[in-house]
Image 1: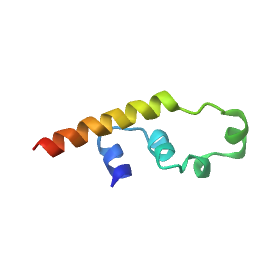
Image 2 (image 1 turned 90 degrees about the vertical axis):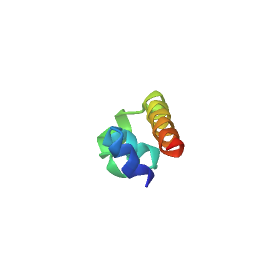
Image 3 (image 1 turned 90 degrees about the horizontal axis):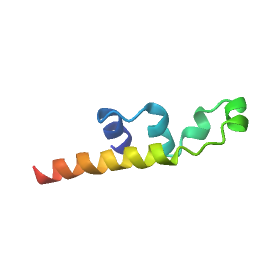
Image 4 (image 1 turned 45 degrees about the vertical axis):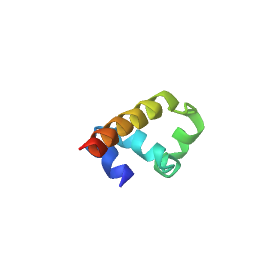
Length: 60
């Protein structure tokens, strides 16, 4: 449900996969070596948007 909801609210596929810890499976060998950025700010933003979406659903 979480990954589907992230897609619905506009979270990019890359960030959505990172949130469910599937990013390593998506990376090529070259990306795994050279892209050491952890994408934490982007993941925090996605989780914040998810929380806002969930709060709206809970209030209804």
